[in-house]
Amino acid sequence: MTRVLEPATPGQVGLSPDGLARVDAAVQAQIDKGVVAGAITLVARHGKLVHTSTLGVKDLASGKPLQVDSLFRIFSMTKPITGTAMLILHDAGLWSPEDPIAKHLPELAGMKVLAGFDAAGQPVLEQAARAPTMGELMTHRAGFAYGIQGSTPEDKLYHDAGLWSAADLNEFVQRLATVPLVYQPGSTWRYSLAMDLQGAIIERLSGQSLPDFMQARIFGPLGMVDTAFHTPPEKRERRATLYFGAEGAALMPLAANPLLPDHDTVPSLALGGAGLISTAPDYARYAQMLLNGGEFAGKRIVSEVSVKAQMTNYLPDELLERRIVAGHQKFRPGFGYGYNGVVFTDPELAGIPVGKGTYHWDGAAGTWFWVDPENDLLFVGLIQLLSYTAPPLQATTQKLMADAILD
Image 1: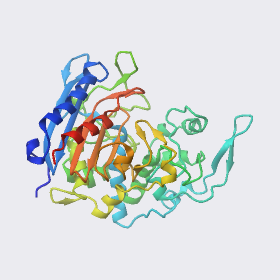
Image 2: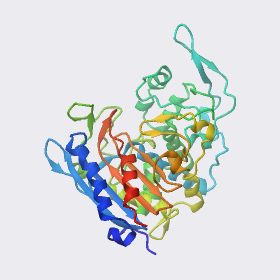
Image 3: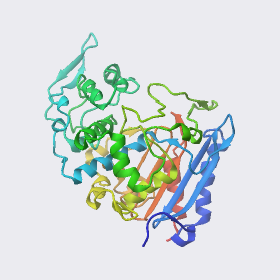
Image 4: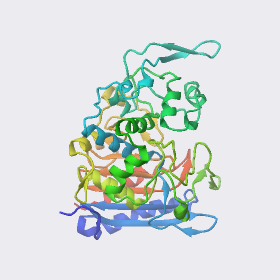
């Protein structure tokens, strides 16, 4: 059976048009409230594209409507793609989960661990019980923080190291080597710059820049014609405006700044954790590749074994019982983490009616996706809202999609 997102009707793949309409209505309600300017959602099942909605506008000031090919900052939805890039290199035998990270990034050998701060506010360091591994890097358990906002003392150490102003990923790694790990490797899960470090490893192992590697090995073969770490000037008009939203306040457009770069050419510092621009149709091709077990349109991107590895939970029950929160992602029994994304091991226990083995992630501006192998279904949702009070559209649409499945 062809599984390349050819168009079909919902009924042909066992989906209810009325159920899909309820998904649209839930998203439209957020637009009507002024919480979101616009949204694109896309649904495919059994390899067939059955529903795409363009709701609201891409820019409030101009009132221009969203189009199917509108461009969105997908922020952390970059992370699963970076995971796939890493697994392409794993298929080539270039790394293994047991490897120390320093095997591939020698600058990070011998990193100390932050044990606290003294009375003068200076960091107190201790030896690492062992070296963090590549498997831990792939699952946010290696010991790193993120440090983007510098809102905690340990994050401030990362922020003050100037990681995000590095000229390239080599300099990024060099600057990271000057700060400590913030917990003993393997002892917990903490959202971090791990996927940006994966980008540096991809460059070292492949001999290509991260953008070139992804274009050659993922975007080009998949036909993802609008996915890149930059927006060329000729595509700028298609970009959806990025907004900041606070509860009870009007949406405010956000200009580019050092933490929200706006590249019109390929950047020298390409962030594997947050840097991509994409469209709903492009991301659906990536998602369908995962559902297809690593291939799309007759082109093998990554091995089936590696896709299964990416979509396998690696967090022990004891860690899930801590119920760690990262944005809308609330880890708990049944809701674990694979390589660069969430894995549902027990949807009933997790309280979300998706199929067992569903893999998903989201992005800082409210974008979200999931692939559900059990129901052979994918969903992509794109908005552009940076907000501490953003609606939980991923969980909302997952619950509504369960009602749309007829078989």
